[in-house]
Length: 352
Image (cartoon, rainbow, N blue to C red; front, side, top):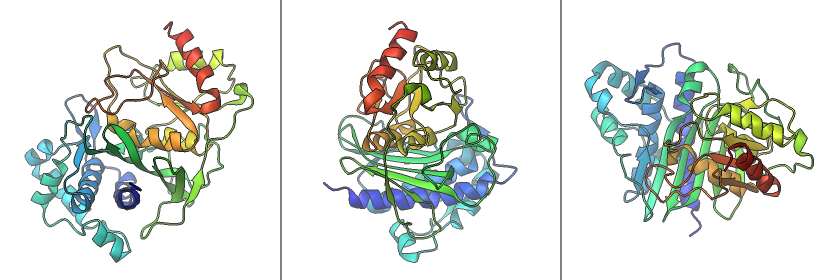
């Protein structure tokens, strides 16, 4: 299969959802509620999930969906549900054909809640399963930093299509990430990128737009002839990645620059286009299992851009085990030529 239709729908759906998140991003009040695990979720998360699941249901009605959010809290909070409905019903692309392809406007507030709840698949090793994170990096979204809208299609346990919208990354692929990339964002021109990949065909970036898809160009990881000059990135939240261990790995590799801390799969996208080189997400807790929606699209985009993505033991990420990466611990992403060196440093630091 070529998966070109799946890629088109994924890109358009992520683009439309990114428009919604941008609208919420610069609001002071983002309608935040807390989930059972105390992580925050905003009206942007719920709205983006509704729009993307609607697009999947319209085009691929028999596919399963593993998504981060569910609507039980909204059914108990009528005011918040109505606020999300007002937001969702007004979001559309300026191109009518693209809008129709995505299913047009949702019919009602109740239908919106039902659609949000259609992301409860258990995942697994068989069939077509979409992994959706409507706002990856919600804390970054709330803080005014980086976040991403992420969608991947997993077929029989293997990621075949990935699309990620990064509204706050610079359009220019050549801009190396720095501490400013993860800092408070402003509504400057020249920001907003849509990354995508289909297995076996390479990865691309294009500017996010309000209508049809903008022209794309291929992206690739940059060569790293001198490891000491490599740029490595990690998560902002210390609870997500062992920052002390990350720093020890960098030191062992001879990397002298401090890490660049970014929220979300913007890290995968940044190294895929050569704006950085290495992404480390080393385990904080022994029993923590990564969620598939946090990695599916980014994993494919990096691999199609000439990189490798593995766990701390050097094993490929296994998306066939359900809603989590139960067979893996941690994430290490780097260009193929230096992946073994990075893995060896990780094993040394973690005493594996």
